[in-house]
Image 1: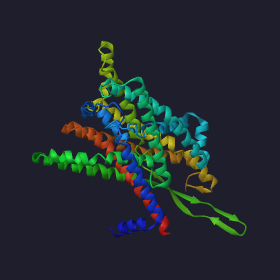
Image 2 (image 1 turned 30 degrees about the vertical axis):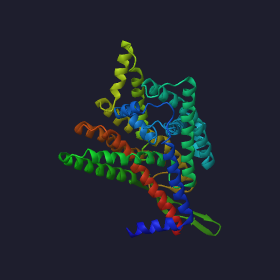
Image 3 (image 1 turned 180 degrees about the vertical axis):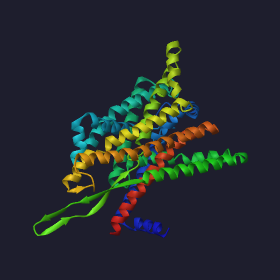
Image 4 (image 1 turned 60 degrees about the horizontal axis):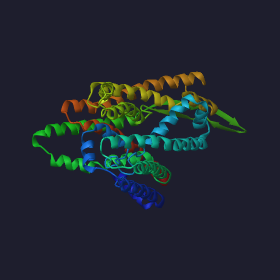
Length: 423
């Protein structure tokens, strides 16, 4: 506890650290102010009724940073930017030139890669914005709009998404932590006061055992996420001795830390993106009276959060995407080559192909544990929802995963900044 207060004191007394923290604080205030500005033409009563009965838009609201709940000018949130980043990561597998830029050209290559992601964000925001506005207008939430109003609304929300992306990148550059993750985190946390007040107003003494069960469930989930996120499998690495002139260099030993969950929360985002798409199409087609279209709509709406099929597919997609994203972001061959160039080797393993194969084997085994755990954590709230009948739990599990992961990342980066000042 004493160490914690000492760190807080150091953060506040160090001018540079204080500026970083205050920058993050004011950036998040601006984000929350923007989320309170609605677009024109909203029927507020119809909107509240629609959102109260629609888990699909509830999950979208998580990734919009809370901006979708009142159709603010940043209702798209950082969703288009996240989608663009994911697409660019996938393209590194299919396009060798992009893989070379990302993995081999260092910091300059990553900056180029990030610029491509920003450019791709604009058309994706336009497509997502048009689809969302069209669905909302079909649901009579946006009323009495002219063609000019529709175009204006589209430009406003696309500009809002780009502005939010820019704020997120400013936070990453001049503040502490990942700006985009912090924006999503702030959107989730901002809904806590209303949820707590709702819980207080609807408190029922007879439901105390159920509340205690939720509390225990939440503690177990948070502890499990922290444990798996922090877990590492160290691989010993030894540096060969090298003679330069009259001096000998190297000869030290260290280890290569492989994380059990290399992919973080990205598999959750991948899985939700795929599972939400049929629901969006089904919701759109549900308004048509044609028999064939109605049957297609019913089939697509089988993917709702209350269905058994949704839970099974959710687990499978999270499991598969954990492996997939780990393979995209972690290249054992490149790591093996770098070790060999620096005169390092794994004891008992030949450099080159054998080292790459050994790292791949270890990574595959520990990723199995991470994928099973991440899939289980994703599905557990759905099981609890089925047992208790409380629908909000389906959203709570995803929110907890994101919040805990963001907090852990932020704590690590703050500790790194404090350690630099101490030295």
